[in-house]
Amino acid sequence: MAKVKKTPRPRAETPKGFRDYFGTDVTERAEMLSKIAGVYHRYGFDALESSAVETVEALGKFLPDVERPNAGVFAWQEGEEEGKGDWLALRYDLTAPLARVYAQHRNDLPTPYRRYAMGPVWRNEKPGPGRFRQFYQCDADTVGSASPAADAEICAMLADCLEEVGIPRGDYLVRINNRKVLNGVLEATGVTDPAQSADVLRTIDKFDKVGEAGVRDLLGKGRLDASGAYIDGVGLDDAQAAPVLAFLTSRGADSAATLENLRAAVGASAIGAEGVEELAQMADLLAAQGYGPDRIVIDPSVVRGLGYYTGPVFEAELTFEILDEKGRKRQFGSVAGGGRYDDLVKRFTGQSVPATGVSIGVDRLLAALRAKGRAGSTAPGPVVITVMDRDRMADYQSIVAELRQAGIRAEVYLGNPKNFGNQLKYADRRGSPAAVIEGAEEKARGVVQIKDLVLGAQIAQNATLEEWKERPSQFEVPRDQMVQKIQDILAGQD
Image 1: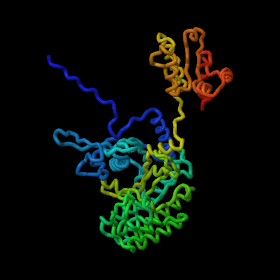
Image 2: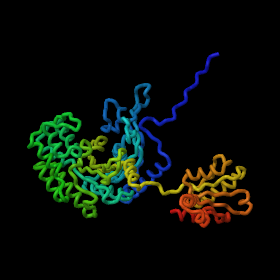
Image 3: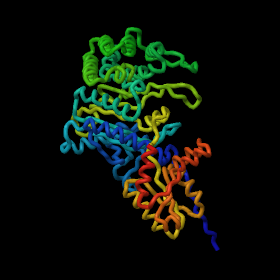
């Protein structure tokens, strides 16, 4: 008789680069996103939920390798057995779907179109510590307005969002720059070769790490890095490097001084002057709304997204320090970024459509709030109705229905009711504020026992025997007063 081969059991583990989110994680994120959505809504932005799947063609320039459509994204081809059909992919971010949505529905949408979107995105990249292949983004964008007022509004809204979720003034800074200013600086260097221009941009991006002296060396012949290896420089002479260094060090005591320094850095460049003027308009608009340098500043060292943004660029940086895994102090850093991207919709329509927006790093902002002790759901767990007699389950379901109809989160214990102590342990693990007990005797007398689990835990931890007797944590109340008593307990625990 042939031996039947057993099918191996699947491994109970998440795929590499993914993770599971449990109750507290999900609740904290939902509460934070709800607060951010409230700010977006207050500013007049509408919610948008687009498909999690886009065509690879729609994702376009976001793909790192257009010759391999599945590189960087999770992609598959429809009708793959015939080698035909569209390539589809899980969305890489929330901006590319917005461009597709606007191009597809522009005749039905108001102009400007102001939307916010929140949800998971997927990237087929190598995972690492704190770097996952699925993560949340939280975006807000204005499509169809070229006014610097749209950029200023996004920055103001970003500052308000940070304060709304629990980051006070002094613990964050929204920093603004403009890609046009940087283009003007490149013009002032006289560099025309695209490859050399790209090298200059990469060098500018290292300013935070190597400082002014390091950038000067890298723009010239090169320098030794921390490991002792020699890094070749871009090859600019001192005169060519001067505008770049002037640009990077142009932040002054206030916006007026910074703008004056930037005008000097861009020299006679028309595009550079245009960028400086846009920054000046943003500064005036933000000042008129009360957003001073303690919240939003012009900072030429912001050089994120150089190959993507076309005008103002901004990021939100948390300025407080935390301890890393080795106990060393370090600044938390950036939790949001954005800017103007006027060329994205053009891919679909052939016509330039101005757009500006911001993306908040949800997981990173949550980590920052936890590091400062400002995260944590305040919602209590469910009230647990214990089961004293499994044959009276209908009675317990009647109790839980009454609590739920009163708006109280509640559940009947559905495990093995044999051990009453295990039922209370379950309630503790659920973070339950109270437990309801109705045995046969209580049922006959028309009463229930209510155990205040929060007070009970406090008494057990701190009180003397005499105090414990004076502050009982279990109450007997008439059955028709049960809801009111639990409402009183919940109110007292707030």
